[in-house]
Image (spheres, rainbow, N blue to C red):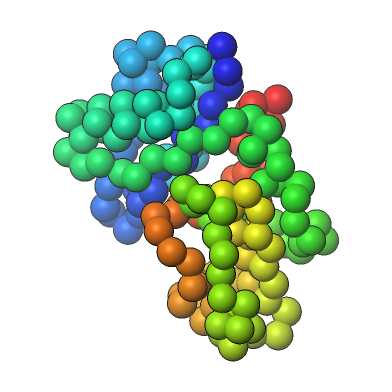
Length: 171
């Protein structure tokens, strides 16, 4: 069975989208997924399944909606995609809490001029397959670039600390 990583958007953020991780793990096991593990309270799960990603995403969204009353956007990635997100960027020496990977449905094509206009000194970005990596030395909460990021479509973000922990879980 293939190892998958589920990244749910807007879970346990500012009191919204409450999703207890123990109940989430149990729900994933009830769906028939193997080796279920979760990481922190922000909607990250690692499990095994041979179903296609779009099928898994829909199943998870529907099951969360039925059990918890909201349907968070769900992004599935393979173990290799998580390892690539951790390694494929030019910010290896940066504080991992200040580097965020935005996971999207497709590979982004951001407007470089807009990015440069919004960037503060030291800000940087990197485009990868179905992801956009953003380095904000002043912090994502104080970054004008992060606040007005010119990306289209649904996405969810994780910092490199979280991605490193997920990479460790997938082996």
